[in-house]
Length: 388
Image (cartoon, rainbow, N blue to C red; front, side, top):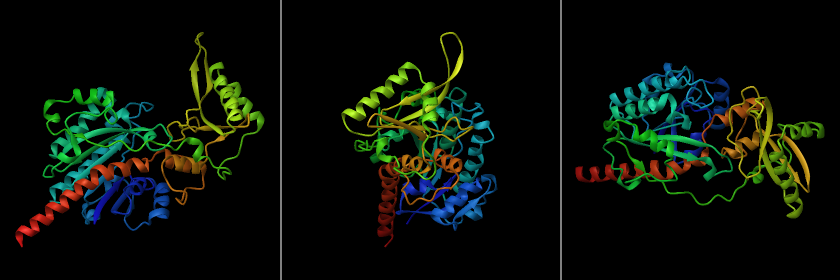
């Protein structure tokens, strides 16, 4: 049985990605609303809702092969205040790491530790926050390396995220490592962050060898609900107000979509974000910017409503708009349609926008986590054979 802890669990999207071959023996999140959704989907037997600082070793009596942590990103995000790992939210990494070190000290070191966060971590405080986390892995003696994985490889959502994965030093990693970085998984920003690390931190570094997934055929239009129950279509006046906020460049995109929908008799779907832009005269104005590239923009938590995506559906030359629905956001994260979501729209959007993309976790599990555990099982079997 392969077991794991899920810290900063949200509604259990890492658990969904790991699948039935992995068993959760402990989960933790501070948010009671997310905890409720977690229980509705997974049950609450192994869930502790409360501050990570209050988690005890007694609660972790069942050992884990994998420790997963998608710790808060707000202080590391490019859109955040820049507090980094010293911030109130992203700084919760440190009490989490204290729990990890206590577990190791007790003689129950997990085979794998995986953390996930925004790519802003690579440049936060001029790379010092990334170096601090690398140092944390180095200090416990694990082999570790980082990857940047964009959800767009798997689903029609632009969502690059940073994953740092550590493997216990007694485990052979030759089959899942590469001698050099990959253009797919190791971005220029990651390479720059790595180059700025001290030599001692590089000594335990691994370039994880992850195969590319099959080419994605799913497009955003495939995920659109015909009859959403969480949002309403805008009135023609509301749609026109959005159009009035567009520049000529964006209006031209809409006209091209209308022509395409007529010519090819197809539904064309785009996403719209409202952003504040400054014109050539220095005047700031809110603009509506649309994209019709079959990929949704990155889901974000709906602070003030400005980050909620509006979708534009163009069919037979007719334009309609509305907010993206709760279920559509869940589909963009790879969650199945029977996954229970909050009834409140903003709560559902916050839940999905804060999560980790399910098929990304599955890909990491299939090509890094599972091979590690197969090696451990074979090594254990060989040891038992020698003892016998």
